[in-house]
Structures are given as structure tokens and as C-alpha cells.
Image (tube, rainbow, N blue to C red; front, side):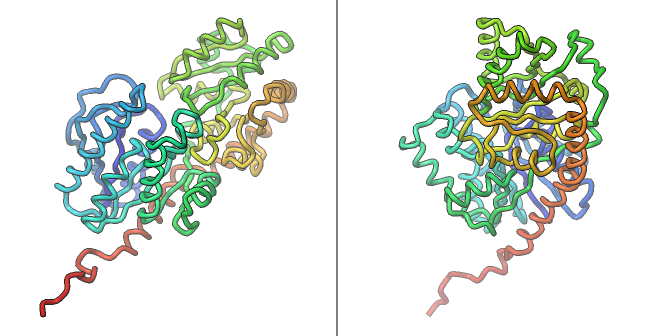
Length: 422
């Protein structure tokens, strides 16, 4: 079976999120399924920082990587992002047309226009594609009020999104809330949707003691409440900052630690300084090799989403928290994938959105019951090992690929539509 993975960011990009997830997935599939031939079409860009001098072609231990020189799509404005995405999409289409036929294509939602080129190629070459939804557009932009849902751009994009979803041989979503949303909003049958969550490699992130290098380096003591990840538009940080203000004087032993980068980092820093939220400390990303140490520094880890973002994405950081053996406090809707796992595995607590009083009380109560925290942390690691390892998730992807490839007739098997001469 020969497949092509198409994504703007890939190995050696280790920025986390999609680049790291797809790189690890591809590596595992190639190493454990020798019948699988994997090509990757990507860009010469890195998600964060300046691009390195990456080769246009590289053989990564049996995975053939073809890199295109295109502008980065993670631009500050929506117009620039769409324009750069269209350039990448067009370049992908032309590259595919010059390659031999694949058994299937595997694409992601970054950039959002990518399915446009892949759908056109699929129709021309009779090649099925599997569509992995990490973040659903334009729905995410309209839910966050970045884009007016009544605007021509939103309506046009939604029209195309419906077509891409219904044309895909299979759509993979990373949470049950996303499956429910696609069924409700796009009339996509449940039989066309596979729920395959994100994961964490239990060998890379392990439960460690709390006497960590990160704590020592930054002179952190007491109870640490950690948010580690992207400071993006669809995370709600106001609830956390308001809860921190309430706990500043009542529980000085609690420290909120924010680690990461992103669009809302400056906003957080400005609020912390202007409102003297002295129990909040802000740090940049740590190197990947120190990530397990960072997660082990926490007594409680946080996950947050803006209201309306459920069903449109699932925070990948959640699975790293599970692997670290730490409990999660999630500020999300009750029907989100994260909330469902916390309830099923008893490895954390869900707090209603826009209720900082409840969040402050929950954090204070948990901090005062270390035995409960330890119990939830053990449950977190257990459910990670039972359901969310790379091996388990990669095997689900392989099964999906195999089903799609075997059920799709090869071009020579497709009956001709040309009428016989009279």
C-alpha cells in the first residue's frame, strides 16, 4: 500500500501540534508496517521560527519527503493566511500530478484550503483521500467571532468544506464531540467518520517526581497550577487569570505557571502586570527534551477552550498531561472530548466556562487534598496506557488506510464511461 501524507509542516519540525503528531505517526507506521510505502509532501517551512535550510528531497529512513518552497501560512492576518495557503495548495496539486498514482492520500486541515487541491486531484486520478480534522474551518473562525458567519467568505468556505467532507473516503476526527458536530452541522453519516484521538508516547513522557529541574531553575515552591502549550485564540485565559486573582491573597502557596507562546501571550502578560496578579509567572517554551520535566513540575495541569470551540478541536496537550500522571482541571463544556475522558477515567475535574469563582474554589479544594490529586494522577497515567499510546492510535490509522485502499477500485477496474462507437 502506497500512501502520500500532505501537510505544510513535518519532520524535522518539532514545534509540537500537527508537525510532531504527523511525524511521529508516519515514523511509527513505516517502522511497524513494512508493507506501507510512505511519501510526504510538505513545505520547507518550520511552524515556529525561521525556516532552516531543509533539503527539497530527503529520504528519512524509508519515508520519502518532498518539500515545496512556499510562504508560511501562519500569518497574522486572515487574508495573508488564506493567500499563503492557496499557494501551498496549488503547489501540492502540481506536485501530485507529477508523481505516480498512490493508493490513498492522507491530508490535514492545515492550511484550510488544502482539501481543494486534493479533491481536484482525487477526481482526476481516481485516488481516495482520508481527511484528518484537527481544527475545523471556517467554523472555528466564526465561533471565535473572527469571521462573521453571514459573510460571503464564511458561507463560501462552508460550502466547500461540506463538499470536501462528503467527497473524502473517510473523515478522521480527534474527539467524539467533533464527530457529533460533523453529523449535526454537515449531515455527514456516522459511518463515514472515524474517531481516532491524539496520543502521547508513554516512553517520552513519564510520571516523574516533583523535585524537578524546572522548579529549581525558577525557584518555584508550593502547589504549581500549570498551563503549558499554545496561547491561541481558542483558549480562554480570562477565567484562569480571574481565579488567580481570587486566590492571590487567600492561598499564597498556589502559583499559576504559564509556559508557551502564541497570539495571546502579550495579552496575558499585560493583564498580569496591570492587575498585579503576582501569583502568575510566565515563561517561554522549554526544549522538547525538557518537556516531561516541565509537566512533572505541576500538581495540577489546566486545559481551557473558548465557549463554542468544542466540536471544532481537541487540545493535544491533554494527552501529554495524562502521560505525565498529573490530574487535569478542564475549563470546557461538559460534552467535549476532554470532559468525557475526565469523567470516564476519574482523572480530573471539569469546571464550567465563564465561572472563575467555581474554578478558584475547585483549585483550592484540590490543592488541599493531595491524596485525591495523587489518585487522579495515577488514573490519568493508567488511561493513557490503556487507550492513548502511539501504538494503539497508529494501528487504528493503519486499519482505516487499509480499509479505504482495499475498498477503492483501481483505475483499470473502473468501468469506462465512454460510449462504444456505433
